[in-house]
Length: 399
Image (cartoon, rainbow, N blue to C red; front, side, top):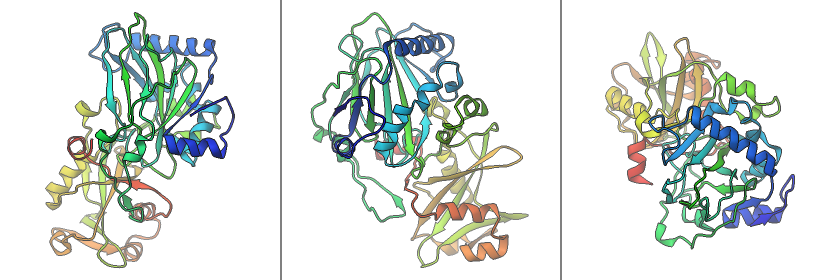
């Protein structure tokens, strides 16, 4: 569906977006604005881009992302009022900027095959309600390389149980994809794409760089299951006061530890597993990044926390979902949650571990305790959570 430039969307436009899975707004940026933004992205690619092993203009796709939004000239596009307004109309919620991304493809790059970008293991792709906001800075046509979408392909993925506390999805069948179409994107247009829409980007024929902004926004009530990308104070300071609401988390300390809230749901009142070591703590400890597999999209600690749960509790945790980040003296502790009605309660209540109801926790620790706060967030109504997985596990089970 194509619209003219408008500060908000009509009910018909929103309905068409949900039906087709994508929405186009033409001429969001002027030719001059698109050219200037492309020039800055090219400068940043030449200076320092991901992957660092490549040297411009070697044929490849280069990424300028994350906290680089603080670079002079790159910030404004993330908070552009037409972009944010269109995104939030599509999401049906206020938005968080889960990823700031500029891609540049040099001549000779092979492009990308058909795929969708819902990925349980990535901060950018594991929310249950997120969108691309794609702004070409060169035409996306046969010369530069088009961006093709499969209409209605987001409907190939369905929520298994809409009443579940943590939602799970069916696996899409690529054999059922509708033919891909070319939205005929020009420099300065805006394409908003549902997270489950399949798309591909064939290589072009040009001797010039293909460049575009591929920002991602999630609904504020649908946090990424893998956890948010951690923005730093420079990125926070770069955006305007009105746009700071778009930044989901910001801290200048590294994520050093990770903890898991384990919930037993076999009885009417849930129970939570804590460990006594001078003080009561959630299972977990020092976390680490799957650096070789996630590239620029950092922040997930699921793989490390699965290993910690196995070592400490001999418990196989098949999934977990991000809850919050807690500042400690050592750094940031990223906290996830996991619930199950078939846990072996007696086997887990050993070696300093014990189960507590929420009311028992409040009596033991006090209502203002950090763990009680975590439980409150986990049980908060209206939050839409999905199942996050480790990188290797997710690729085997979903992608």
